[in-house]
Length: 396
Image (cartoon, rainbow, N blue to C red):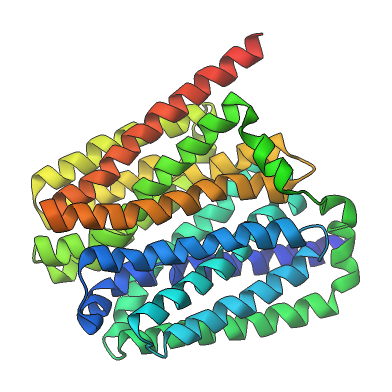
């Protein structure tokens, strides 16, 4: 019984980290305007911040592939938290823009590593009803995303953007101390739940083999286009309200509305809708497409805030459901099952923020946000095809 209690204590720490991480990931979208003003850059250049953040995430593929199964996941997670906090601290020194991009790449590397590990650890520690548990984990991340824009905006009232990044880094350093003390004191009990059998090694050949099956291909592209949809919204929706609609007060609320919807979708809607996971994603993404298009056509702050909420409510369940599906396909290699959908997130999040920023520079930010609606529609198409593929497989 005590051993179970220690495992749940560690799971609680994971949930706390994910909440804090959800807050920290909103810093880019929330602070994008003061960063643009400080460096005197255009939107396409500002989109590179998100791209370098995610480009750094590609290094996480190598970190996970090389160290998973060789280094205990709890140790690897603690090390990644330390380096993530360090990279936040480095960004707060306000280096030249080119060096700032490198700092965002480092933050992406270690943030993606620990993000992947949290999913893998939950799959190992809570394997029963995996889709529900993944929705809970990502729902807590969504709560962090909900609180992030408003909390960071409040900090901005008394601190500049660099000082906000420094404050966030201090929060993670404090968390790391708590994490390290707990793991050290309960090491023996925790290693029983995370034995070597649950930390199976895998290689780059396993990554290549992933795309040999049609269902994997469809799953991967569903995740990629959803990530393009979400990353475009996350980076630009606040600026759209502030600059295009000229309603500064509602910018942070538009971003928070999306994350409120995402949190509700993951915590309450997804577990209670009785349908296959791909079908939930398909229908939700189609609703998101219509809602976002309607919000843009309304040309009002209230309309776009309402649209952002509907987008979150309808399609926010996508990431945890896709990760759960993939971990169920790889029950003995949950790190691989988590990593493969995340490679789709990494690639899409590199491509779409600067692409939508470039579209905004040439055609206007309304068209830039329209890229997000197009991605949502493509998510609906690929997830619908995945649902059909899985139904045919079950019949044959």
